[in-house]
Amino acid sequence: MTVPRTPPPTATPTPTNATPTPPTAVTTPPAAPHATRAVPRFGRALCAMITPFTEAGALDAEGAQRLAERLVDEGCDGLVLSGTTGESPTTTDAEKAALVRAVREAVGDRASIVAGVGTADTRHTVELARAAEKAGADGLLVVAPYYSRPPQDAVEAHFREIADASGLPLVLYDIPGRTGTRIEPETVIRLAEHPRIVAVKDCAYDLLGTQKVLARTELAYYAGCDEYVLALYAIGAAGYISTVANVAPRQFRSILDAFDAGDTAGAARGQRQVLPLVESMMAAGLPGAVTAKAVLDSLGLPSGPVRAPLRPADREAVDGLLAAHREAVGTERWT
Image (cartoon, rainbow, N blue to C red; front, side):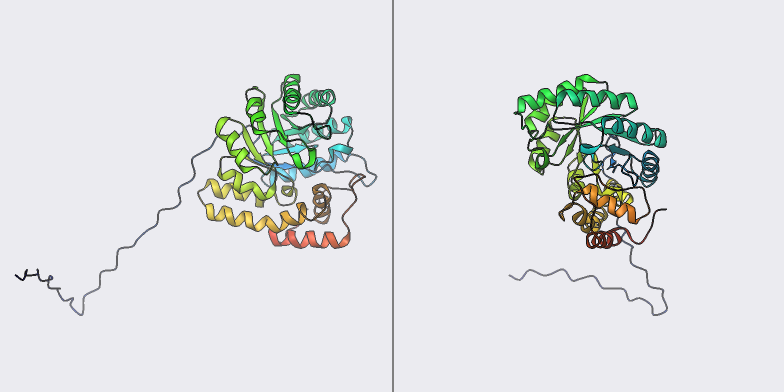
């Protein structure tokens, strides 16, 4: 038996003089911002600031103040002083304290100041921690003890002793490629129990280990490798402590701002935009202190020479750095 089909409805012809009804506009809702994350105590966008020297090689405190003010004006929430980029191996204890005092005077409470105090000697590190607190720092950056390569129980005891030595919060600095000593994830998790151990500068290149610690602690993680800024931020990091931000602070800040606004594609574009500069400054064979100072000097900002055993970049290297900087930032000149 044939089943009769229901005939289609007869279309009503539209009069030739009628105005056609426009199609209903389809609107795409704007990307929703990501869930608001708590602002870490040191901020999100931190620069591992160089230490300016005079042409004679002395600490240039006035230059440090001018550079610090410019970095804060350009979007840095915090400044890390006397890290490796700040040539801490070749600055004296007195210079480290004087640098903190000068920068604090310049930026006031507009930005946090984290003082690098890590050495291979626990006793010396304790002395530097107390001096940084007295000079006005907001926190301490403490690298794993280097060269002697202590076992993990000794690494843990080292950090606990320093955390007990002052009232300042402490950032663990995990960079085994330089120190020869890893702060293993399980060690970090135990150290997170200390009330003044609050953050990590992560240069371990161990995404799995980082995620384990993020899942089990409340530590604020900072990307210490500039090419990892977005990758770590996307999985819950607090932000970054960047060497390249010395010369491109707004560009790095824009990566975080775009991600927080829900513009993940824009954040990815921002990360890709700075990658040639990151590679030129951090992966071309010269230390970050050398490359950052070369670019800053060309931009007319305080920098000065590097201290031996570091040597300044040659003309060919400087030209390459400036080309990468123009690609990432444009032709702006800070004066």
